[in-house]
Amino acid sequence: MVKRYIQAITILVIIIVSIFLWEKIKDFNLFAIKDIKTTHNMVLKEMTLLGKLELANFTFRDVVEQELVRDYLPNPKAILIVQGEAIGCIDLTKIKPEDIATKDDTLIVHLPDPELCSYKIDHSNSKIYDTEYAFMNEQSLMNEAYTRAEGKIKQSALEMGILEQTKKNANLVLKPLLENISGKKVVLQYRMKTTLQRLK
Image 1 (cartoon, rainbow, N blue to C red):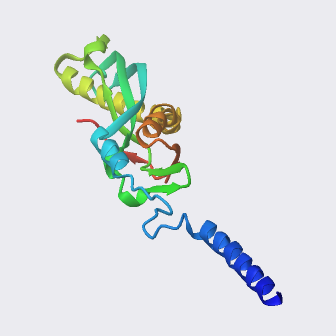
Image 2 (cartoon, rainbow, N blue to C red):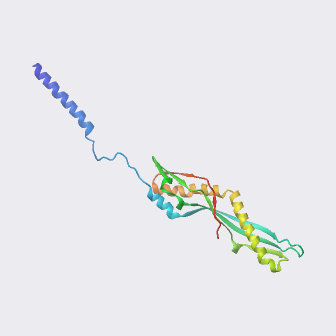
Image 3 (tube, rainbow, N blue to C red):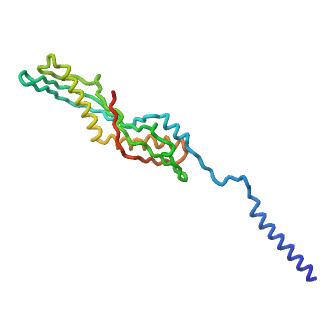
């Protein structure tokens, strides 16, 4: 009688242990995927295809007074109304794979520094207002005036914060684009080293 009782208890224990082990291992799969890691080559490719992304355009209008100083003859003078523009951009072709990182549901992109990628005179909307004693010196007078006006456009654009505006516009334009491509929240970061390129 005692022997049967012990056998029954033993069988019950075996059944309980078997059920417990079954519950633990029934979902075990040697080939199960624990986590998914994704590389964002598509994001990098899309940004590279965009090339230099123009994000800020500043337009300027200036009245330039130019004078060539002579020793004896009257000084040639000119007054010009000059219009020009400066463009801030980010060169996305400089982005490397190591500039893109993923953390949980966030994509972190280290962008190249904003650039003043061009500054130029709009000659079609610029004109000579008045000249005095120019005669044979008119061309050199005009060339010098336009050169100085172009330099002033670059200086004014930087002083008025075109690079900072380029960064702000990147958040408005580039961030939603990357979020749409990657399906993740995007954080844009920069390394501030200003570069300039004069438009030929």
